[in-house]
Picture 1 (cartoon, rainbow, N blue to C red):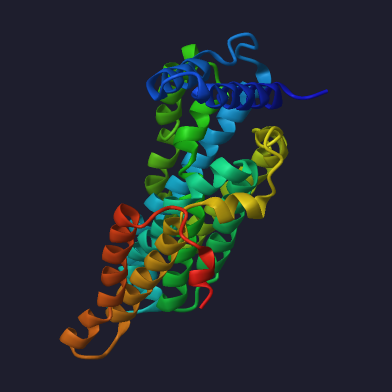
Picture 2 (cartoon, one colour):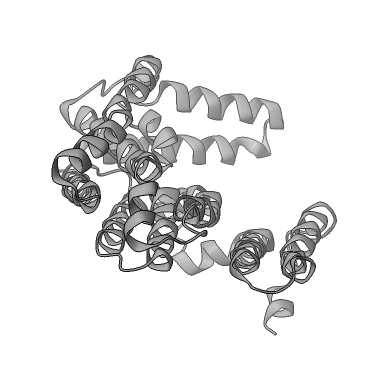
Length: 313
């Protein structure tokens, strides 16, 4: 028997598909209003169930999981640098979080819209465990910086929890749900103090990362057991399209954006670590900036039906 979340997902897909089919007889504004109405009312016949509550809790845990990686490392930077340094680049342990997150948070939401959210969240939680292990076993500042970048990559997927938690419950409960979701962050907000206390009484900053490993591991298991949003098969039961057909049908800009972000972030990181003169180091950022400008021009002027064979080279 299909779960309540699968039923809700199927109902939403069917409703939107029906509204889309009505474009032949209705105006664009009428169709938009119908889609909004369906999204706001779908799920009222099911109500708030135990499964949806457990899934919402999973999203709150994902929120805290990525906040752990954002809040704990800055609180213990000086202890890390004292043991593994001194190294003037130690602040990049936290800065690299933004470089990793900038790539995945930008495209993760859209890709999960197409393929389903479950495995994106599970992948993000797994990446955070890897980042915690890399950092907990750090032997040098560059390794700690790499761990920070891995944290950012995993957190980029988990930041989708802000939107995903509102999809789980019927519309009448969404305001309360998002309020409780935000309140749950108190768990992560007290972690810097807990990390400082662990260092004070144990003398080992790595215990803060061991704490993260434990929480991230629990989060991964909980996600796997209780978070079951509509799958790819459910989301595309009507159109019958394959994954490749859908990703190929996306505008070229999504692929272009990923390339731009990778080039830009890599250029910034390289320039920051380079021993080259400042002017030459700064010039390493230009390729990413240029491609970002070109990407925006492409989105404005080129048709979305651009032949993909043009990009094969």
